[in-house]
Image (cartoon, rainbow, N blue to C red; front, side, top):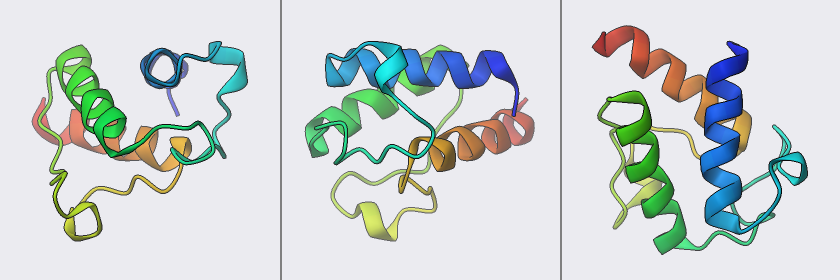
Length: 87
């Protein structure tokens, strides 16, 4: 995992959770961090903007989305994959 991608994603998620980035671990889930569905959508928008990518995420049906949001690490892996595919 590229460090800068990890740092950038953690910064976005930490901001959304109103936490210090050091409180966000790769194993953290959105639920652990107190991020609700609206917060998740805002995080995804911020990530799309930050990385100039389109995340295949449907807020109405998160389980049906082709994007793993089960943990911070899963989100980072998904973003790195999208950045490669979309660049």
